[in-house]
Every structure is written in C-alpha cells, then in structure tokens.
Amino acid sequence: MSRGSHSAVAAKRRTHAAVFAALGDATRLSLIAKLCRGEPRSISQLTERSKLTRQAITKHLRVLESAGIVHSVHAGRENLFQFNPEPVAELREYLGFVSEQWDQALSRLKSFVED
Amino acid sequence: MNDRIEKRIELNAPISRVWHALTDYREFGEWFRVKLEGPFVPGQVSRGQMTYPGYEHVKWEAVVQKMEPERLFSFTWPHPKSFDKADSPPDYSNEPTTLVEFRLEKTASGTLLVLTESGFDKLPADRRLEAFRRNEGGWTEQMKNIENYVARKP
Image 1 (cartoon, each protein chain N blue to C red):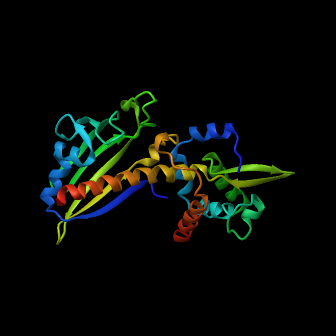
Image 2: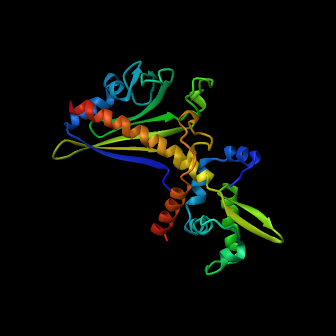
Image 3: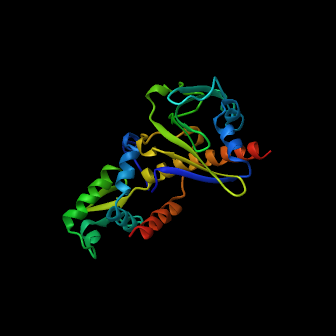
C-alpha cells in the first residue's frame, strides 16, 4: 500500500484517543473486519447483510475515516472505502514496546526480591 | 483494543519485602535502574536519572500518587516523544502522562504483584519512541488481532 507524505503528516496529528474511540464500537469493528480482508468496498457492499441503514453505516465510516483507520478512494462514480492499518499498528507497536519494558523491569524486580 | 497494560507476576517473597523493594527509592532504583534524588512522597515529584545502560542521559520524573502500605503504590509519569540523544530533552511539564499502579496481594507462596499502566488513550499519536521503533510489517498479525477482537465482541 503506497502512502503519500501528506497522509503521513496527517497521521502524526491524529491522537491515539481518536483511534481508541473509533475502535470502541462493535459496528465499526465489524466494518474494519470486512475491510481488512483487502479489497476496497463501497457503502452499498458494506451495508449488505447488515441490519443498519446506509446512513448509519456511512456515519460509522466517517468516524473511522477521521481517525485515519479507513480512507475513501474514488473508482469511477463510486466512493470506495479502504482499510489503512497504520494508526492501529502504531498504537499496538507503542503498547508492545512499553509492555516489553515492563516485562524486563518486573523480571529484574523478581530476582531482586527473591535473592 | 485495550488502552492499558496489565502484568501479573508471582514473587516468592513476603509482601513486606516486595513493598520495600517498590517504595524505598534506593531499592526501586536498583531494579528499575534509575538513580533517584530522594524518597517517594505522595503528591510530590520524584526526580532522578536513568542508570539503564544506553539510557543514562534520560531523566526520570514521576508524580507519586498513592502509597497504601503493602497494598498499592502508584505514580503518573510522562511519555516523552523520544529518548534519542540527538533530540532536545523533552519538557516533562507539558507531556501527557500515564498512571502506573502496583497492587500487592498476599498468596500462599509469597506475593502477587499486579502492575497496570493506563491512560494511553490520552497520548498523541506521534508519541512513539523513534529510537525503539521496530521494523514495519506484521500487518497479517494485525488483522488477525482485529478479527479476534471482533469475534470476542460480536
């Protein structure tokens, strides 16, 4: 997936809060699950087999878009939505790093108190 | 996805021993690898210098929150954008912080320590430590994670 420098800069301005908030909803997670299989999808495709209206799905897609988790691409007259893994990956990467530091610190604490 | 880290570790040492290792600033400094200026006092800033090899240039700064003997020790600390020597030192007073809590419980064989660090949702998105950045990729795993999450929370 090629990404321009413009979107990279935009990505930096986003807050983790927006990403967490965007992920904290079952409908949006199910939209991500559909989109992260790879192919960009239209709103109609994403609304199929959903109990929600097209308007409701669109609203959720806009939330994901503003958090940078999906972006829309034009294909002819159609507006397609595509998954962008970067914001979620950045969060996980950072939490993973902090988590690893704690594993090491706690294992030092363990040897320290058990000696 | 969780905005917190939680670790549970069984320590084969009495709760009083663990409490001391956590809250005595010299002992904390030994295992955490930081040289602290003075004792931990709730409501006060704790300052020091990291002694962890390679990070000796990094300042330690935290605000002690709670010290409930043999139960709970907590502090907030900043997550600077970078620990890289080449970058200017972070201004800690303006950095967003996370909350670190150490909870202790007595067990048959010693002490259960539960560590949590929370508040990552308040950190700006660029708060990644460039110096420690891992290689890119892992998208496949990423997507699996999201799918698992969805499966758990239908």
